[in-house]
Amino acid sequence: MPKAIVLGGYGLIGSACMRALARSGFDVIGVGRSRKVAETVDAKARWIIQDITTISTLGWHDILTDVDVVVNASGALQDGLVDDLEAIHVTAVSQLAQAATNLPVRVIQISAAGVSEHASTAFFRSKARGDAALMETMQNWVILHPTLLLAPQAYGGTALLRAASAIPLIHPIVLPEAQIQTVYIDDVTAAVVSAAQGDISSGTIADLTETEARSLPELIARIRVWQGWPHPRITIRLPGGCISALGRIADGLGHLGWRSPLRTTALQVLSDGVRGDPQTWENAGGQPCRTLEDALQNLPSTRQERLFARAFLALPVAIGVLALFWLLSGIVALMDPQRAMTVLADRAAPQWLIATSVIGGATADIFLGLAILYRPWTRHAALGMIALSTAYLLGGVILAPDLWADPLGPMIKVFPGMTLAAMVWLMVEDR
Image (cartoon, rainbow, N blue to C red; front, side):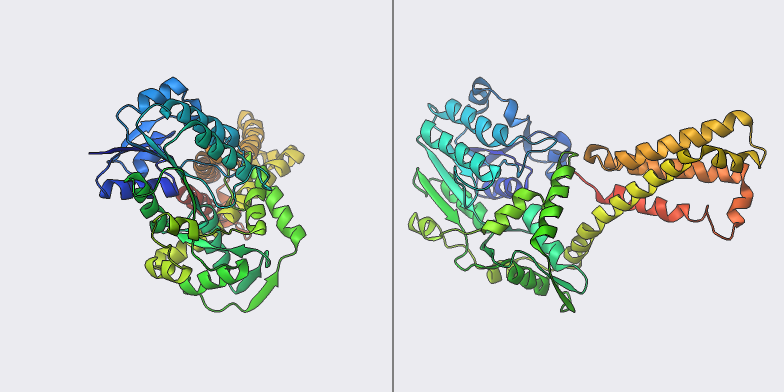
């Protein structure tokens, strides 16, 4: 049985490649840096849990023993808290290629349509350097360049399309000059299997894409019809300055661990257009890629699909509201702590408890408001908000039961915040 290793095996493309290769008779092993995520994606698969940026040439040589095919589906859109483009796209590929150069192994590199050393984004430039390192070092390789991917799972650009088309009542006109081509995930995995089986000649560099291109607003409108949303009532053209501001905000959040599809790299890629030439792939013996219409017919538009699209829009709003609420709650208390202490003193609370509760509670509020913005801590912060809210409610029962009957309902209003925090805890998951 031929043996294949898939780098980035629990990613969108990588996980699909692992399943396709396994169905085609390969003994498949995935490589990823998080055991928790790997086992969530496929607990039955075999995994090598290691960060590819830390593997030396000697380490790769050991991993590649008896391996016939390596599929590199790893990648990152932009530098961030846990992502280093140079390390992922260039250094790791270079080390892999050096280890594989004298071994009977084929490397299938999944790159991106539009890569160039002179491209407008660091993503494309680093991808191009990684492709070049592979071509210069090895003889047995195939490089595939997918355009905008359509898949049942939704990450990155595919998630952004779904969310943009799900905006209630509004059809956004964004980057109207951009021309976009798409490719269906099954066509990408079929290309990987063909290359792995040796049906595609070594040294092939080919785009994987449909033939037709369309504007980004047209694509969003088509996705909206596919999802089954009603026709929008309002068309809004977003100015370039607004889009740029969103990109800069998303970049800032990237340093907190959030991989937003609105980062400047993604917006620049869309602005430049996502185009490819399907002819090279077909000339190499590959099957033509499906059109957008054919791809959407193979993707079920279900209730889950629509709920995801709306949840993708709601989640950042929920996190932002919680962060603002808890930050302001703590800041307001610290601006006038004596007033807050009076509330407890008037109810005969123990003197030692008053200052501790007010200052400590306000500090905890501010900490949780900041912590929920830091991606690795988001779920923990949401649970912390629920726990601290519960403590406030219990304290109110013991020390200030009269507040439960207050006409403004200060105690009752805690419950919606707890519910919002619970929703964030449930909805946030690792990719």
